Image 1 (cartoon, chains in turn red, purple):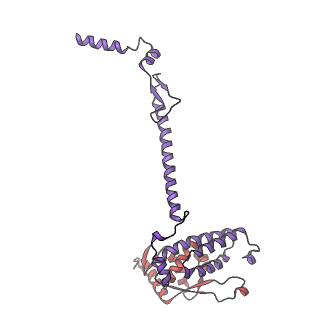
Image 2: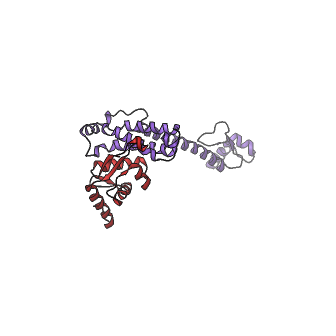
Image 3: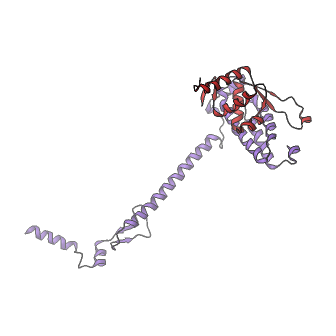
Length: 101
Length: 184
């Protein structure tokens, strides 16, 4: 915990976020959905999402909806990149071996 | 929000104001995006207190995001330039985080020191009362209690008058006896 891995500080909260994305790597999630799934507070969640995006593990894009039709504003959706998928898998594999790379 | 909840409460106004205020503190490339993202995500919160907690969390998030800037490799150039601004050039306001922490630490020290002095005063006074012998050789100092204790010893004249002159030899008698025994 707290050890830098590929330039990312792998904390428990970061692992929780990555775990949600690894369950279905192709599905994009909004920050609100990640919060509902793992219960991480917004003050912790968004810095993690931005950190992972800055490191190239995530990409984000606006939801493709018409706010007037949907009746709500568009959300920012985050999705794992191929690099993020590989590195997140390596991090979890490292924990599985009991050794954090 | 007004469409989903039926009414736009004062709490929601505060929440939205907090989010806009937090987003304005973000780097230029992120300010608009974060404001729109957070204002969209706050809609998923069911209750007004929950939305307020979300907004307060966003205020904390922006502090972390700004502090993370030096470690973000994928930021645009103008953000990188901004993050390299020395700490001394930052415009820390009167109520900024460092000032608040400083006042908090000073206040805690003051409270601790005041509590320590008060406790010592009371403890010393009670100990002096507890160990004061109960044979009438001490008189109470009710008016000027201080750290030296609540009792002061009586003078020899007061002791003689209290227990009787016959039982307490006068200093001159003791001196004469000693001189007398020495001469013998």
